[in-house]
Amino acid sequence: MEATQNDLYLQGVQYFRDHSYYKAYERLIDCPVGRDEFARSMFSAMGSIFLHKTQKGEKDLAGEAFRCFEKAYLIVKERQKAVTDTDNDPAVFYDLAYAYIEGIGTGKDIGKGVDILRDIDLMLTSAGGSIRDVDDDFGIIRDHYLPVKGE
Image 1 (tube, rainbow, N blue to C red):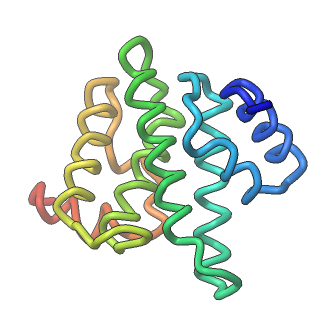
Image 2 (tube, one colour; image 1 turned 30 degrees about the horizontal axis):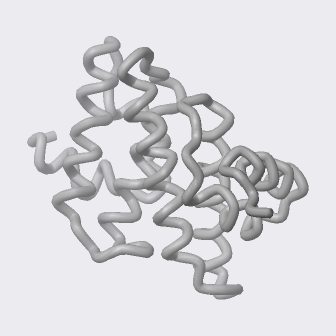
């Protein structure tokens, strides 16, 4: 008997909760997921974990990191049709912008990364904030976006 999408999703969530992130990834990456904060946070966390493992040289999971960052981004973009979370959404966008700018798990595309940074700026500006409020852990806003804005 084949597992249904719902079964795969529930298995993936359980693997995630058990800290079996690669098994969770295998179950969840191609599953349709909701627009909820939990789904977004699972993919953001798995992307960060896979990136960290790749950077430490444990295993090359850059492709998986990129797909997780992209999935989290798509979840947020869909959810933003109804509500924007200016506390958490910029971090999701930042992760994907970083992946494009550095070529992590995808072809290096600074232009796409800068476009995503522009989306962060517009999101925050429309809410009375600033892109300068985003934690720029990897310096991509400073190095690739603010010079474009002339700051």
